[in-house]
Length: 458
Ligand SMILES: Cc1cc2nc3c(=O)[nH]c(=O)nc-3n(C[C@H](O)[C@H](O)[C@H](O)COP(=O)(O)OP(=O)(O)OC[C@H]3O[C@@H](n4cnc5c(N)ncnc54)[C@H](O)[C@@H]3O)c2cc1C
Picture 1: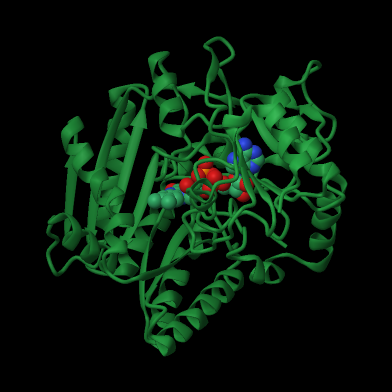
Picture 2: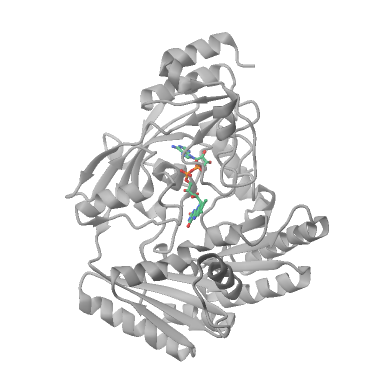
């Protein structure tokens, strides 16, 4: 039960209409896109940074754990409320405050949706590259908290590479500005970097300064179709050797294509066992053309059985549609999808892909593999059904085997989805004891009472 005094204090801060204790609102904030679920005691919706700070002071005094929530599209349970805790729903902090075309920086509140920010930047001939597949719903605050990536990250980098400064609120209610949002520019220790990827465990992000790049004027899309997974994986490794970096290199295996085909009606010949979707871009048409020629050459060298090229907007949309349809398509083929986003050095992609095929065979489970393979990020989807107990147990063993194989190939547990609740069990595989100790000490320094998104990551 939340005490009447606490309720009154919260209502005084944000207004009665922005504090929710009813079951409907609590239920809709109980989970994210993962299968983890915990009913919060309350949902509070602040309108500004000062209110966030006041809410946190009340929660800190009363030892109430909190979680910050963006759009709730996270895949690892990051925004799932802690037991007995409150959700701080950042929905109202959703304004683009400024686009500075000289400094090429956008200042935004955390609930601005990625795609809306991209569209706004485009009006100024500027470009915000990080493009998670969830870009039409995920918030920029969530993107920073998870250090999200997407197809373009192979050329342009991940979210981390675009954060120039931020404002965050500590559990005790202090408001801290970092990087270019601080009065005297630049911290001594890089506090901005500490907050990125911290999954809402160190502070609540209330403002962001994000770098913008010049908008590439020309793009071309090329779909390479291959007779084997090994050829598709090899083409990615070959591409890296050429010195040309496509702005996207998306890899999809035969099982993925089959699911997309059933879902969307787009047919692929039976010979096609894998495809790679390449995007190249440039400021001039000539620059783009040179890269396009290189992609075609590399595909031909790996004996592509087909190469499809899109020049017009409509053709490009048709090719991107294949990639965008994966997530909904997979939902139709089995009741449960265990979705892991492991990452290895690009040169190790063919090896890991081969090992995943072996793991599927060994545990007799269906594994669908696709991803932003350009930066080594492979989405491994183990398709199963919790009701089929034996199959589900084999699927869980397969997950364990995938993580072990990834670490053995010098990879990491997560390329972009974070650790949250879903992967914390495997953290000791990736991080040494010393590393874990210092991460835990860092958390303690920010949040000594362990009230901000407790139980996540570690
Ligand atoms: C269909 C689909 C496709 C996806 N594709 C990709 C992809 O291509 N690449 C990728 O990287 N991810 C992808 N994701 C995962 C997800 O969209 C990202 O992790 C995204 O950044 C989460 O943003 P959100 O606003 O939904 O955050 P939430 O899910 O609400 O929260 C995620 C974490 O961030 C914290 N957080 C949120 N806002 C704040 C804040 N203001 N201050 C402090 N902490 C905060 C939360 O506490 C939580 O720990 C996908 C998800 C779906 C459902």
